[in-house]
Image (cartoon, rainbow, N blue to C red; front, top):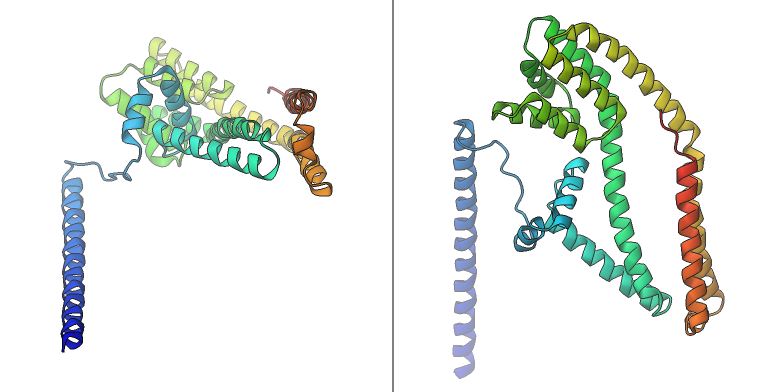
Length: 315
């Protein structure tokens, strides 16, 4: 009897739990649907932006980091990359990557390589930001001829430069559309043309953009022939675009060589440890071996930087 009672009681509690779970899940789904409908209704009425954005992580870390100089510089770098990541999120992800590489280097190679792998993680994070920023700048430069053409046609039709910038922000794709939308929003809240375009040139530094910004600023100040200047600038930007594409194609092999040099160095260490297990641990067990490893890594880094410097051609 006691066993039957216990089975009946357990079955009843299980069924009640399942019913409560289903009711709770239904209430949660209904609440999410009502919230989505409310947000959509407010957005259509203009009381909320159309895109609410995703939920941010590490808010406390992000708030504290933004108060420091490092956090402000990191925020500017992230703004130039176009990544939907806050400084706090990027810093937390970087620390996780450093810790993971530290443990992997210490476990697979030798304890001495743990700090080196952690430093490599920091370098990789910085290089990732630089790569994303450069890629966005290159894409923006490729859109500059079309941007100059749109501004020239809009001003030729009698539109003000502020209106022409807003029109170009709507017609162009990212990143030019996003960056021009920021400029248009700054102009809408009372910022001057010089300041708004100057911040654009700081976010995405390039010679082509500096020339375009200078042309727009001088034309806005002096009221010169902005249409003629923009059309002449469009032809120049098209020629520079083709020249940059040819140079990038010619230097693609040199770029791959610069990355192959440090990869060969790390690969040789892995090969050495694979041929004779524990060789790296014995080699780094003495100060002389540790110094040799540090010097070798420094030489590989110098070789990487030198190859990149020698292959850089400014157009």
